[in-house]
Length: 483
Image (cartoon, rainbow, N blue to C red):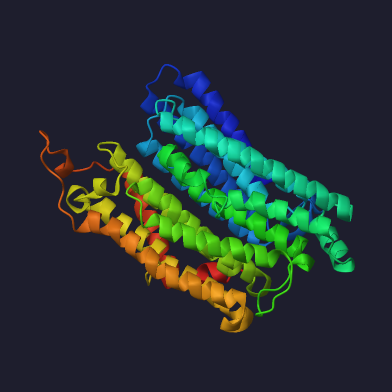
């Protein structure tokens, strides 16, 4: 529990330092002090996650410390560190210490989700993270869009929590246990029942919401558009990584005997065909809806829905290929997404950056931001040699290995490959505005041609994120060999 302890103590320390020393300082100084303190807590949590070591299970089986736990903990901590650093450079917050503290509480929920091996711990960790994210989504009290985003996120999240808890209680009633290995043993000994099908559907509905998978995606465009930049970055990156780790942990070690089959044309009933349907719906809706977007943040939201479809394909393949392809894909997607939101946040310090056309002439206003944005967008599009390409390659290869192109998994992989070409179009629309289109003019100050000042800490973290995508694209074994 060292990572969680470091994050919670760090959050309380941030509030204490701000109360004791920050009230008479400017908001900028308070934010800087809070970010430095919060970053120290994240670094301490990284040290704890790295040095704990591996164990099969602890606390009577409530937590598991394996390779997936360690990798996910370190991954969400890296994404939280990037988020905090960008918040210190881009945010204008009335309550900076509270913002940093809630980010740390959310990250504690993420790290606990990564290690959960019991239904009760999984639910508590998920709700700790979710309640923190609801607050972060509505943290900008000066924007009505932020309040609307938080309200929608909270209402959908509360409903999904009800579905998840109801599904968990049905599973407990059927199996008599909340331990994943005991649930798996019970399901292997007893034939599936209609009540088990109802429970699994409820769990999949809840996780479909958490993953922003169609048709449970309706909250995502509004939250991505209305939330503060740093909040949207954390929701789009670290929460995805922790959520999918928990998702694959519950489904395969826990509910694996009720998985069914999607490797042959005939298939078999279970939760795998439902996940395959969610994946196909997310791929189709996310990519097709993104084509019609003119708002940059909403385009990233529909892009996230499409990527959730590929991640669900990785969940399907995890039973045969292991956790490596899914983790690699979600982590590199998170790095690219948090970087893209970081670029938006830096631009919004001096000029609006809501519509895609607001990026026009970015290559003249800030070559550094343009280069970093190009790396992030090309990685999301899956262009080699960036990490996004190899992430898609590993997931598609793992899905095709299930049964070739003869079964539903193979058809789904072919659909995802085809729609990746569709996604390339709307990603290139972003790059066209940033790299090709001349800056708009006609205003008295010609603000579009002004240079965009990039704070030193933001520049460092944006370049760092871009280098990670290049490095992991050239050497994917740095991550995959962990598994």
